[in-house]
Length: 140
Image 1 (tube, rainbow, N blue to C red):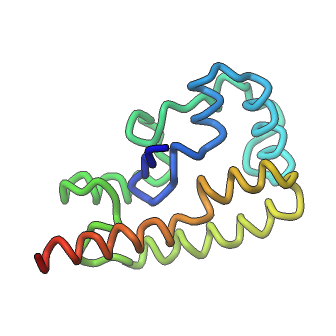
Image 2: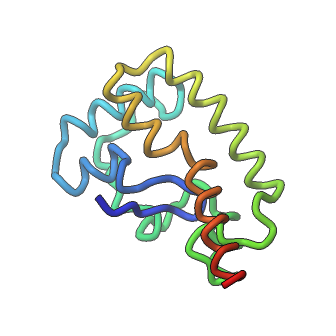
């Protein structure tokens, strides 16, 4: 499977919203919505249609617009390719992501948690790998 990383390190190719949108799987979108409502990430009246997502690059409503703008201005595919990675913004995002992970862990079923872990909670791991690759390319 090809990994499609967002600027912030989210793995779109593992995201249940992205997968559900690509497959037209409204039951998966409903499960995601129900989980997001339980953990306070979305209001109870969130429409399933509002959760459809074609990936971070296609999404005009990026959850992290400052990161997206910074990476775009620097002509980077993701923040791991940046010379200043990890910056203060990324470190703040990693902290928020870890807090959200613990909140979700107590509510999500095992299968959904694994999907979310791969999609969102490993962003530092994914971006660290991107940083290593970028450093190797510069040395070569």
